[in-house]
Image (cartoon, rainbow over all chains, first blue to last red; front, side, top):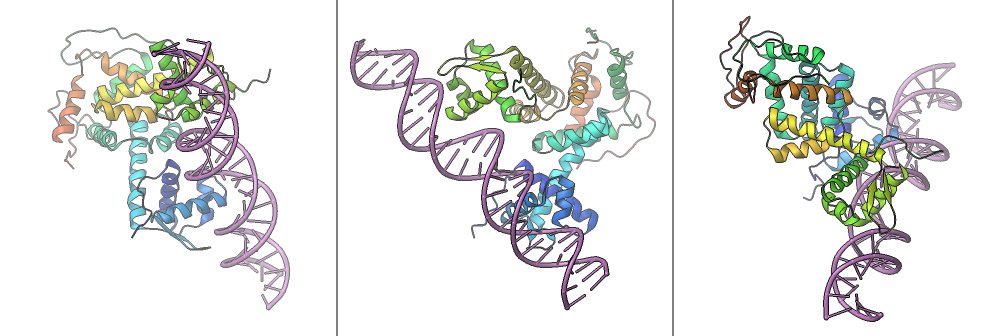
Amino acid sequence: MKRNESKKLTSNMEDYLEAIAALKKKKGVVRVRDISCLMDVKTPSVTAALSTLSEKGLVLHERYGYVEVTSEGERLARGVQGRHDMLLEFLTKILNIAPKIAAEDACKMEHSISPQTFQKLTKFIKFVETCPDGDRPDWLKGFDYYYKTGKRLKCKTRVTKQKNNTVD
Amino acid sequence: MKRNESKKLTSNMEDYLEAIAALKKKKGVVRVRDISCLMDVKTPSVTAALSTLSEKGLVLHERYGYVEVTSEGERLARGVQGRHDMLLEFLTKILNIAPKIAAEDACKMEHSISPQTFQKLTKFIKFVETCPDGDRPDWLKGFDYYYKTGKRLKCKTRVTKQKNNTVD
DNA sequence: CAGATATGTTAGACTTGCTTAACAAATAAA
DNA sequence: TTTATTTGTTAAGCAAGTCTAACATATCTG
């Protein structure tokens, strides 16, 4: 009754789990080779990782066999993937960051973001994307303009006090 | 002429350097003990880290002496600290995340954020904080409201199409 | 100044994660 | 079916970072 499900995964193990779940979804079956290719590590690293994840009850793996993900593994993988997707969306859609850069950032940040921040950002994205203004709310277009030119578009609403808005 | 300034620091070394620079700024002199307390590690870990940072030319440290930061070390530390501060500001001021949580997130994300994302977010914060609307632009207040209630405040500007905005 | 205390270093061990080299099993092809 | 190829595992070792235990230096205090 003392299973080694010490909950907390390292970033690396989260990466392996995420990759495995993604491969499962995409290809149906998952082999050591697939994981090693996707993650750009050698196969012995994968074997080692699988042994760790097995002990934690997140994957099933018999010698020379396919890799299966347990339901608990699924659950965790969905969490990581969810954080990744959300971050990617925030970076590309809202901040307008180049997809490649955004993907790299998302890959690293997905391991460190707290549930609170995840929730806030998720809502923030939703807030932006369901805006009646259309694709991109006016204020966000205002940011695009500000980012490019350093200047602020004329504000349509009340102006209480004007602060400096210099370019650096 | 072959100094070991292999540029890229690990997250951990970035943390040490950041802590050292912060202590220097705050207390004037930096001892191993201070670093070990601040970072919650034992002193031998600090000694080892200092040896690494010394080799890279980022700190100066003689046996049993104070720790000094080189100008290159300063420069790097400022970078890390800058990312930290920016992230903290974004999380607390814009997303309204509790300071403690925000600080934890910032501590981890400060190591993984790309220059591009740093720049975008920096501008985004500036865009928000120099908004003529006052402390917090109207659209951001709109987000606060949306976050709390799941409902969208009436939009003052043109409404092209209304999408669903459910709470989950 | 000399002992007690605080601080710093060294040595050795452990963990995580990676590698290469050698071996073992499974699959494909002759 | 026997060989060749691909795939997977084991073993051994390296690097970063942590720790504890033992030792060394500095500093404080009587």
